[in-house]
Image 1 (tube, rainbow, N blue to C red):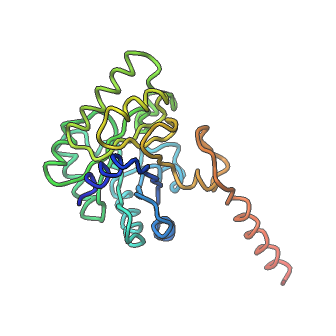
Image 2: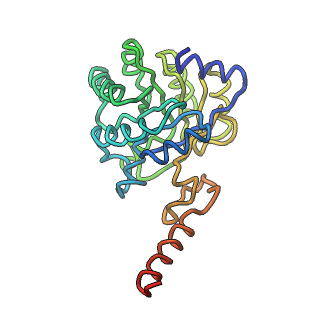
Length: 251
């Protein structure tokens, strides 16, 4: 059974999906051992690993570098990887980029936006594709920030149409980012494939978060929609400070 069949079966069985990101071997191994449903090597690595202001400057080579590390740590969960900005502008370019990710260990790829032609070509070539609608991080500079989607009737209608189009093109799941909760629920009910929300409320078929946000590892940046489950930054720094103190005082 492939990823799409598993995801559709999970949705039919009302088994909600829990997805998280990873960018390195130890995180991937811990997530996999914890029973996570899918691990995404996201272009969010630009912000949470490389110190960039957004995801736009992440390259395909950088995704591949981190994907290979994650792949070494995973035995059970599917591993998906983002197609970075400007690597899937045409169907042929999308296929070439996606093939590189698959060759590097990805079980699926994710792309942003209503691009059914790209999705259809990838699926035709045996590549599993996760769609992504709503707020598109790769458009953040053009939009001047992160904004909730689906507030107007016209925008909601367009999102529903795009979701159905991506499903028909062959997507195995659809990420909905910062979409109005009622609309996210409406889309979820209309699709056979699962919707995976991020900042889109509880009516989606699952949730995905950036792992450092979930664990409170970066207190300088916490998205408003994320409720951190712990605060690992504080004990992390406490351990470092204790090491510094012991070293400088000679224990």
